[in-house]
Length: 451
Image 1 (spheres, rainbow, N blue to C red):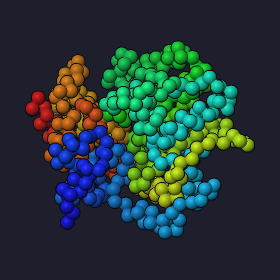
Image 2: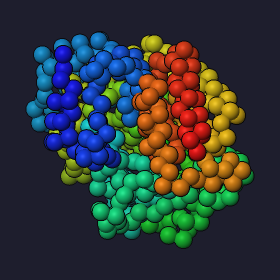
Image 3: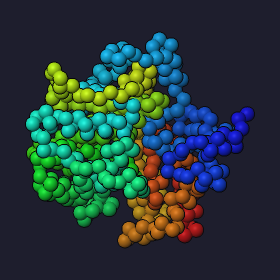
Image 4: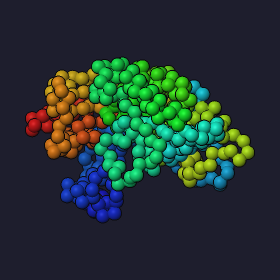
Protein backbone atom coordinates (compact mmCIF):
# COMPACT_ATOMS: atom_id res chain seq x y z
CA UNK A 1 0.00 0.00 0.00
CA UNK A 2 1.46 3.36 -1.05
CA UNK A 3 1.65 6.08 1.60
CA UNK A 4 -0.18 8.81 -0.31
CA UNK A 5 0.45 11.58 2.20
CA UNK A 6 4.17 10.83 2.32
CA UNK A 7 4.40 11.13 -1.47
CA UNK A 8 2.29 14.30 -1.44
CA UNK A 9 4.54 15.82 1.22
CA UNK A 10 7.64 14.99 -0.84
CA UNK A 11 6.08 16.60 -3.91
CA UNK A 12 5.09 19.75 -2.05
CA UNK A 13 8.53 19.99 -0.49
CA UNK A 14 10.63 19.51 -3.63
CA UNK A 15 8.49 19.46 -6.79
CA UNK A 16 7.81 22.64 -8.76
CA UNK A 17 4.37 22.02 -10.25
CA UNK A 18 3.01 24.05 -13.18
CA UNK A 19 0.56 26.91 -12.56
CA UNK A 20 -0.16 26.19 -8.86
CA UNK A 21 1.78 27.16 -5.72
CA UNK A 22 3.00 24.23 -3.59
CA UNK A 23 1.78 25.97 -0.43
CA UNK A 24 -1.69 26.34 -1.91
CA UNK A 25 -1.68 22.70 -3.02
CA UNK A 26 -0.60 21.52 0.41
CA UNK A 27 -3.43 23.40 2.08
CA UNK A 28 -5.93 21.81 -0.32
CA UNK A 29 -4.61 18.28 0.22
CA UNK A 30 -3.10 18.16 -3.27
CA UNK A 31 -1.65 17.06 -5.60
CA UNK A 32 -3.61 13.92 -6.39
CA UNK A 33 -1.06 11.10 -6.67
CA UNK A 34 -1.75 8.94 -9.74
CA UNK A 35 -0.68 5.32 -9.50
CA UNK A 36 -1.94 3.54 -12.64
CA UNK A 37 -4.11 4.03 -15.71
CA UNK A 38 -5.91 2.27 -18.53
CA UNK A 39 -7.80 3.64 -21.52
CA UNK A 40 -9.25 7.00 -20.49
CA UNK A 41 -9.20 6.30 -16.74
CA UNK A 42 -6.58 6.81 -14.06
CA UNK A 43 -6.46 5.53 -10.48
CA UNK A 44 -4.84 7.35 -7.57
CA UNK A 45 -2.85 5.82 -4.73
CA UNK A 46 -5.96 5.73 -2.54
CA UNK A 47 -7.81 3.64 -5.11
CA UNK A 48 -10.09 6.38 -6.47
CA UNK A 49 -10.81 6.15 -10.20
CA UNK A 50 -11.04 9.21 -12.41
CA UNK A 51 -11.75 9.94 -16.07
CA UNK A 52 -8.89 11.97 -17.54
CA UNK A 53 -11.05 14.16 -19.76
CA UNK A 54 -8.04 16.02 -21.17
CA UNK A 55 -5.91 12.94 -21.76
CA UNK A 56 -2.87 14.48 -20.06
CA UNK A 57 -2.35 17.75 -21.94
CA UNK A 58 -4.61 16.64 -24.80
CA UNK A 59 -1.66 14.38 -25.49
CA UNK A 60 -2.48 10.80 -24.43
CA UNK A 61 -4.11 10.29 -27.81
CA UNK A 62 -3.98 6.50 -28.04
CA UNK A 63 -5.01 6.16 -24.39
CA UNK A 64 -3.28 4.74 -21.34
CA UNK A 65 -2.07 1.21 -20.77
CA UNK A 66 -0.89 -0.08 -24.16
CA UNK A 67 1.40 -2.92 -23.12
CA UNK A 68 2.78 -3.31 -26.63
CA UNK A 69 4.26 0.19 -26.43
CA UNK A 70 5.96 -0.68 -23.14
CA UNK A 71 7.29 -3.91 -24.65
CA UNK A 72 8.65 -2.11 -27.72
CA UNK A 73 10.31 0.40 -25.40
CA UNK A 74 11.89 -2.36 -23.29
CA UNK A 75 13.15 -4.32 -26.30
CA UNK A 76 14.76 -1.24 -27.83
CA UNK A 77 16.43 -0.30 -24.55
CA UNK A 78 17.90 -3.80 -24.28
CA UNK A 79 19.27 -3.57 -27.82
CA UNK A 80 20.34 0.09 -28.03
CA UNK A 81 19.67 2.82 -25.48
CA UNK A 82 21.46 5.70 -27.25
CA UNK A 83 23.67 6.28 -30.25
CA UNK A 84 27.09 7.79 -31.06
CA UNK A 85 27.32 11.35 -32.33
CA UNK A 86 27.11 11.63 -36.11
CA UNK A 87 25.28 8.30 -36.57
CA UNK A 88 21.65 7.27 -36.79
CA UNK A 89 19.56 4.22 -35.86
CA UNK A 90 17.01 1.99 -37.64
CA UNK A 91 14.05 3.20 -35.50
CA UNK A 92 14.77 6.86 -36.24
CA UNK A 93 15.19 6.25 -39.97
CA UNK A 94 11.89 4.36 -40.01
CA UNK A 95 10.13 7.08 -38.01
CA UNK A 96 11.19 9.97 -40.25
CA UNK A 97 10.13 7.96 -43.31
CA UNK A 98 6.73 7.34 -41.68
CA UNK A 99 6.30 11.02 -40.86
CA UNK A 100 7.19 12.00 -44.41
CA UNK A 101 4.56 9.54 -45.67
CA UNK A 102 1.87 10.85 -43.32
CA UNK A 103 2.55 14.56 -43.63
CA UNK A 104 0.55 16.47 -46.25
CA UNK A 105 1.96 17.52 -49.60
CA UNK A 106 5.72 17.86 -49.97
CA UNK A 107 6.57 17.94 -46.26
CA UNK A 108 9.39 15.42 -46.26
CA UNK A 109 12.41 16.48 -44.19
CA UNK A 110 12.25 15.84 -40.43
CA UNK A 111 14.24 17.43 -37.60
CA UNK A 112 13.66 15.32 -34.44
CA UNK A 113 13.19 17.08 -31.11
CA UNK A 114 12.01 16.26 -27.59
CA UNK A 115 8.67 18.08 -27.50
CA UNK A 116 6.38 20.78 -28.83
CA UNK A 117 8.23 23.83 -27.53
CA UNK A 118 11.46 22.61 -29.10
CA UNK A 119 9.65 21.83 -32.34
CA UNK A 120 8.34 25.39 -32.61
CA UNK A 121 11.65 26.98 -31.58
CA UNK A 122 13.33 24.88 -34.25
CA UNK A 123 10.74 25.90 -36.84
CA UNK A 124 11.40 29.60 -36.18
CA UNK A 125 15.17 29.09 -36.44
CA UNK A 126 14.78 27.19 -39.71
CA UNK A 127 12.50 29.91 -41.10
CA UNK A 128 14.97 32.67 -40.30
CA UNK A 129 17.87 30.65 -41.67
CA UNK A 130 15.92 29.90 -44.85
CA UNK A 131 15.36 33.58 -45.63
CA UNK A 132 18.96 34.55 -44.89
CA UNK A 133 20.17 31.85 -47.27
CA UNK A 134 17.96 33.44 -49.92
CA UNK A 135 19.46 36.85 -49.29
CA UNK A 136 16.45 38.24 -47.37
CA UNK A 137 18.55 39.52 -44.47
CA UNK A 138 15.94 42.12 -43.56
CA UNK A 139 13.36 39.49 -42.64
CA UNK A 140 13.23 38.76 -38.92
CA UNK A 141 9.63 39.28 -37.73
CA UNK A 142 7.26 36.46 -36.86
CA UNK A 143 3.47 36.85 -36.83
CA UNK A 144 1.39 34.78 -34.42
CA UNK A 145 -2.31 34.91 -33.57
CA UNK A 146 -3.44 36.54 -30.32
CA UNK A 147 -4.30 34.12 -27.55
CA UNK A 148 -2.63 31.07 -29.05
CA UNK A 149 -0.07 28.95 -27.21
CA UNK A 150 3.06 27.56 -28.87
CA UNK A 151 5.36 26.58 -26.00
CA UNK A 152 7.21 27.60 -22.87
CA UNK A 153 10.76 28.22 -24.10
CA UNK A 154 12.60 31.46 -24.88
CA UNK A 155 10.79 32.61 -28.02
CA UNK A 156 7.76 30.32 -28.08
CA UNK A 157 6.36 31.57 -24.78
CA UNK A 158 5.86 35.00 -26.36
CA UNK A 159 4.03 33.71 -29.42
CA UNK A 160 0.35 34.64 -29.21
CA UNK A 161 0.79 36.09 -25.71
CA UNK A 162 -1.78 33.55 -24.43
CA UNK A 163 -4.30 34.71 -21.86
CA UNK A 164 -3.80 33.45 -18.32
CA UNK A 165 0.00 33.14 -18.63
CA UNK A 166 1.97 35.88 -16.91
CA UNK A 167 4.88 36.98 -19.08
CA UNK A 168 5.86 40.17 -17.24
CA UNK A 169 8.48 38.26 -15.24
CA UNK A 170 10.37 37.51 -18.45
CA UNK A 171 10.36 40.92 -20.12
CA UNK A 172 11.61 42.43 -22.33
CA UNK A 173 9.65 40.63 -24.99
CA UNK A 174 11.62 38.83 -27.67
CA UNK A 175 12.17 41.27 -30.57
CA UNK A 176 10.40 40.97 -33.89
CA UNK A 177 7.15 39.41 -32.70
CA UNK A 178 3.92 40.71 -34.25
CA UNK A 179 0.35 39.74 -33.31
CA UNK A 180 -2.67 39.31 -35.57
CA UNK A 181 -6.35 38.69 -34.75
CA UNK A 182 -7.43 35.14 -34.01
CA UNK A 183 -10.43 33.90 -36.05
CA UNK A 184 -12.47 33.05 -32.95
CA UNK A 185 -16.01 33.50 -34.22
CA UNK A 186 -17.56 33.55 -30.73
CA UNK A 187 -15.53 36.62 -29.75
CA UNK A 188 -14.34 37.95 -33.10
CA UNK A 189 -11.97 40.84 -32.56
CA UNK A 190 -12.84 42.21 -36.01
CA UNK A 191 -16.59 42.10 -35.45
CA UNK A 192 -17.41 39.15 -37.68
CA UNK A 193 -21.03 38.00 -37.47
CA UNK A 194 -20.28 34.32 -38.14
CA UNK A 195 -17.31 32.00 -38.62
CA UNK A 196 -16.88 32.79 -42.32
CA UNK A 197 -17.21 36.55 -41.85
CA UNK A 198 -14.76 36.45 -38.94
CA UNK A 199 -12.25 34.44 -40.98
CA UNK A 200 -12.33 36.87 -43.90
CA UNK A 201 -12.09 39.92 -41.64
CA UNK A 202 -9.16 38.43 -39.73
CA UNK A 203 -7.31 37.66 -42.96
CA UNK A 204 -7.89 41.24 -44.14
CA UNK A 205 -6.53 42.52 -40.82
CA UNK A 206 -3.53 40.18 -41.17
CA UNK A 207 -2.73 41.53 -44.62
CA UNK A 208 -3.01 45.09 -43.34
CA UNK A 209 -0.52 44.21 -40.58
CA UNK A 210 1.88 42.69 -43.12
CA UNK A 211 1.71 45.81 -45.29
CA UNK A 212 2.18 48.09 -42.27
CA UNK A 213 5.18 46.12 -40.98
CA UNK A 214 6.62 45.67 -44.47
CA UNK A 215 6.31 42.30 -46.23
CA UNK A 216 10.09 42.11 -46.66
CA UNK A 217 10.51 42.11 -42.88
CA UNK A 218 8.29 39.08 -42.18
CA UNK A 219 9.90 35.65 -41.83
CA UNK A 220 6.91 33.46 -41.01
CA UNK A 221 3.37 33.21 -39.74
CA UNK A 222 2.77 30.52 -37.13
CA UNK A 223 -0.70 29.27 -36.23
CA UNK A 224 -2.54 26.29 -34.75
CA UNK A 225 -5.12 24.87 -37.11
CA UNK A 226 -7.57 24.95 -34.19
CA UNK A 227 -6.68 27.17 -31.23
CA UNK A 228 -6.55 24.75 -28.31
CA UNK A 229 -5.71 27.26 -25.57
CA UNK A 230 -8.99 29.15 -26.04
CA UNK A 231 -11.19 26.09 -25.89
CA UNK A 232 -10.97 24.83 -29.46
CA UNK A 233 -11.65 28.02 -31.42
CA UNK A 234 -12.31 26.58 -34.89
CA UNK A 235 -11.70 29.05 -37.76
CA UNK A 236 -14.12 29.54 -40.61
CA UNK A 237 -13.40 27.38 -43.66
CA UNK A 238 -12.05 30.37 -45.57
CA UNK A 239 -9.24 31.07 -43.12
CA UNK A 240 -6.53 28.51 -43.84
CA UNK A 241 -6.76 28.60 -47.66
CA UNK A 242 -6.61 32.40 -47.55
CA UNK A 243 -3.73 32.25 -45.06
CA UNK A 244 -1.81 30.07 -47.52
CA UNK A 245 -2.51 32.56 -50.30
CA UNK A 246 -1.32 35.50 -48.19
CA UNK A 247 1.94 33.74 -47.36
CA UNK A 248 2.54 32.89 -51.02
CA UNK A 249 1.75 36.46 -52.08
CA UNK A 250 4.37 38.00 -49.81
CA UNK A 251 7.00 35.24 -49.71
CA UNK A 252 6.31 34.39 -46.06
CA UNK A 253 6.75 30.88 -44.69
CA UNK A 254 3.65 29.27 -43.17
CA UNK A 255 4.30 27.28 -39.97
CA UNK A 256 1.48 24.95 -38.95
CA UNK A 257 1.62 24.07 -35.25
CA UNK A 258 0.07 20.59 -35.04
CA UNK A 259 1.45 19.83 -31.58
CA UNK A 260 -2.08 19.49 -30.19
CA UNK A 261 -4.08 18.96 -33.39
CA UNK A 262 -1.89 16.28 -34.97
CA UNK A 263 -2.36 12.49 -35.06
CA UNK A 264 -6.13 12.35 -35.09
CA UNK A 265 -7.11 14.90 -32.48
CA UNK A 266 -9.42 16.82 -34.86
CA UNK A 267 -10.77 13.80 -36.75
CA UNK A 268 -8.08 13.96 -39.45
CA UNK A 269 -4.49 12.79 -39.12
CA UNK A 270 -3.51 16.48 -39.12
CA UNK A 271 -5.79 19.44 -38.51
CA UNK A 272 -4.69 21.30 -41.63
CA UNK A 273 -6.09 18.46 -43.77
CA UNK A 274 -9.60 19.74 -43.05
CA UNK A 275 -8.81 22.57 -45.47
CA UNK A 276 -6.48 20.80 -47.93
CA UNK A 277 -3.67 23.23 -47.19
CA UNK A 278 0.03 22.36 -47.18
CA UNK A 279 2.23 24.50 -44.91
CA UNK A 280 5.94 25.09 -45.45
CA UNK A 281 6.80 23.81 -41.98
CA UNK A 282 4.75 21.64 -39.63
CA UNK A 283 5.48 20.91 -35.98
CA UNK A 284 4.31 17.81 -34.09
CA UNK A 285 4.66 16.30 -30.60
CA UNK A 286 2.08 15.18 -27.98
CA UNK A 287 0.04 12.66 -30.04
CA UNK A 288 3.19 11.53 -31.87
CA UNK A 289 3.91 9.24 -28.92
CA UNK A 290 0.68 9.73 -26.95
CA UNK A 291 3.03 10.97 -24.21
CA UNK A 292 4.50 7.54 -23.56
CA UNK A 293 7.91 9.19 -24.03
CA UNK A 294 9.01 12.75 -24.89
CA UNK A 295 9.31 13.14 -28.66
CA UNK A 296 8.50 15.73 -31.31
CA UNK A 297 9.51 16.83 -34.78
CA UNK A 298 9.78 19.80 -37.09
CA UNK A 299 8.85 18.74 -40.62
CA UNK A 300 9.70 20.94 -43.61
CA UNK A 301 9.06 20.96 -47.32
CA UNK A 302 11.85 19.91 -49.65
CA UNK A 303 12.24 23.51 -50.77
CA UNK A 304 12.82 24.76 -47.23
CA UNK A 305 15.24 21.93 -46.41
CA UNK A 306 17.20 22.41 -49.64
CA UNK A 307 18.23 25.88 -48.49
CA UNK A 308 20.52 24.15 -45.96
CA UNK A 309 22.28 21.85 -48.44
CA UNK A 310 25.95 22.27 -49.28
CA UNK A 311 29.37 22.64 -47.74
CA UNK A 312 29.31 24.76 -44.59
CA UNK A 313 25.59 25.43 -45.01
CA UNK A 314 24.15 23.02 -42.46
CA UNK A 315 21.43 23.94 -39.97
CA UNK A 316 23.56 24.03 -36.85
CA UNK A 317 21.58 22.75 -33.91
CA UNK A 318 21.95 19.72 -31.69
CA UNK A 319 19.44 18.47 -29.12
CA UNK A 320 20.69 15.68 -26.87
CA UNK A 321 17.45 13.71 -26.88
CA UNK A 322 16.13 14.65 -30.30
CA UNK A 323 15.86 11.42 -32.31
CA UNK A 324 16.36 9.11 -29.34
CA UNK A 325 15.98 5.52 -30.61
CA UNK A 326 13.68 4.48 -27.75
CA UNK A 327 11.41 7.46 -28.32
CA UNK A 328 11.42 6.67 -32.05
CA UNK A 329 10.29 3.09 -31.41
CA UNK A 330 7.54 4.32 -29.11
CA UNK A 331 6.34 6.85 -31.69
CA UNK A 332 6.24 4.17 -34.41
CA UNK A 333 4.26 1.76 -32.25
CA UNK A 334 1.91 4.55 -31.17
CA UNK A 335 1.22 5.58 -34.78
CA UNK A 336 0.60 1.94 -35.66
CA UNK A 337 -1.98 1.66 -32.87
CA UNK A 338 -3.72 4.89 -33.91
CA UNK A 339 -3.91 3.75 -37.54
CA UNK A 340 -4.79 0.07 -37.15
CA UNK A 341 -7.45 0.66 -34.50
CA UNK A 342 -9.24 3.39 -36.40
CA UNK A 343 -8.67 6.07 -33.79
CA UNK A 344 -8.64 8.95 -36.28
CA UNK A 345 -12.03 7.84 -37.57
CA UNK A 346 -13.27 7.35 -34.00
CA UNK A 347 -12.16 10.87 -33.16
CA UNK A 348 -14.32 12.25 -35.95
CA UNK A 349 -17.32 10.08 -35.03
CA UNK A 350 -17.17 10.51 -31.26
CA UNK A 351 -16.28 14.19 -31.62
CA UNK A 352 -19.47 14.80 -33.58
CA UNK A 353 -21.51 12.90 -31.00
CA UNK A 354 -19.77 14.64 -28.08
CA UNK A 355 -20.38 18.09 -29.58
CA UNK A 356 -24.05 17.25 -30.04
CA UNK A 357 -24.30 16.32 -26.35
CA UNK A 358 -22.60 19.56 -25.40
CA UNK A 359 -25.12 21.49 -27.49
CA UNK A 360 -27.87 19.91 -25.40
CA UNK A 361 -25.96 20.96 -22.30
CA UNK A 362 -25.93 24.53 -23.60
CA UNK A 363 -29.69 24.50 -24.05
CA UNK A 364 -30.09 23.31 -20.47
CA UNK A 365 -27.76 25.77 -18.71
CA UNK A 366 -28.02 29.50 -19.26
CA UNK A 367 -24.42 30.14 -18.16
CA UNK A 368 -23.10 28.11 -21.10
CA UNK A 369 -22.40 30.75 -23.71
CA UNK A 370 -20.73 28.63 -26.38
CA UNK A 371 -19.70 25.07 -27.16
CA UNK A 372 -17.30 24.43 -30.01
CA UNK A 373 -14.80 21.97 -31.35
CA UNK A 374 -13.52 19.73 -34.10
CA UNK A 375 -13.05 16.01 -33.58
CA UNK A 376 -12.06 15.34 -29.98
CA UNK A 377 -10.76 18.85 -29.34
CA UNK A 378 -13.61 20.80 -27.76
CA UNK A 379 -14.39 23.69 -25.46
CA UNK A 380 -17.20 25.10 -23.35
CA UNK A 381 -17.26 28.81 -22.53
CA UNK A 382 -19.29 30.00 -19.54
CA UNK A 383 -20.68 33.53 -19.41
CA UNK A 384 -22.56 35.73 -16.96
CA UNK A 385 -24.95 36.83 -19.72
CA UNK A 386 -25.51 34.79 -22.86
CA UNK A 387 -26.93 37.71 -24.84
CA UNK A 388 -24.07 40.12 -24.17
CA UNK A 389 -21.36 37.44 -23.69
CA UNK A 390 -20.37 39.23 -20.49
CA UNK A 391 -17.67 37.35 -18.59
CA UNK A 392 -17.85 36.41 -14.93
CA UNK A 393 -15.60 38.55 -12.70
CA UNK A 394 -12.36 36.90 -11.61
CA UNK A 395 -13.38 37.34 -7.98
CA UNK A 396 -15.95 34.56 -8.37
CA UNK A 397 -13.14 32.05 -9.08
CA UNK A 398 -15.39 30.16 -11.49
CA UNK A 399 -12.54 28.12 -12.96
CA UNK A 400 -11.19 26.92 -9.61
CA UNK A 401 -14.66 26.07 -8.36
CA UNK A 402 -15.42 24.14 -11.54
CA UNK A 403 -12.32 21.99 -11.13
CA UNK A 404 -13.43 21.07 -7.61
CA UNK A 405 -16.96 20.26 -8.83
CA UNK A 406 -15.62 18.10 -11.66
CA UNK A 407 -13.51 16.10 -9.22
CA UNK A 408 -16.54 15.46 -7.05
CA UNK A 409 -18.07 13.77 -10.10
CA UNK A 410 -14.96 11.73 -10.98
CA UNK A 411 -13.65 13.99 -13.74
CA UNK A 412 -10.14 15.37 -14.08
CA UNK A 413 -10.07 18.32 -16.48
CA UNK A 414 -8.69 21.81 -16.55
CA UNK A 415 -10.11 25.24 -17.19
CA UNK A 416 -8.70 28.50 -18.49
CA UNK A 417 -10.79 30.80 -16.37
CA UNK A 418 -14.33 30.19 -17.57
CA UNK A 419 -13.31 28.12 -20.59
CA UNK A 420 -13.48 24.34 -20.09
CA UNK A 421 -11.07 22.46 -22.35
CA UNK A 422 -11.74 18.89 -23.42
CA UNK A 423 -9.33 16.61 -25.27
CA UNK A 424 -9.90 12.98 -24.21
CA UNK A 425 -8.02 9.95 -25.61
CA UNK A 426 -9.13 9.02 -29.11
CA UNK A 427 -10.36 5.55 -28.09
CA UNK A 428 -13.25 7.06 -26.14
CA UNK A 429 -16.63 5.33 -26.52
CA UNK A 430 -20.18 6.65 -26.59
CA UNK A 431 -20.74 5.35 -23.06
CA UNK A 432 -17.64 7.25 -21.92
CA UNK A 433 -18.94 10.42 -23.53
CA UNK A 434 -22.31 10.01 -21.83
CA UNK A 435 -20.61 9.56 -18.46
CA UNK A 436 -18.49 12.66 -18.94
CA UNK A 437 -21.47 14.74 -20.04
CA UNK A 438 -23.43 13.65 -16.97
CA UNK A 439 -20.56 14.88 -14.80
CA UNK A 440 -20.31 18.15 -16.72
CA UNK A 441 -24.06 18.62 -16.44
CA UNK A 442 -24.04 18.08 -12.69
CA UNK A 443 -20.99 20.29 -12.04
CA UNK A 444 -22.20 23.19 -14.19
CA UNK A 445 -25.67 22.87 -12.63
CA UNK A 446 -24.18 23.15 -9.15
CA UNK A 447 -22.20 26.27 -10.07
CA UNK A 448 -25.29 27.72 -11.72
CA UNK A 449 -27.35 27.14 -8.56
CA UNK A 450 -24.67 28.73 -6.35
CA UNK A 451 -24.52 31.79 -8.59
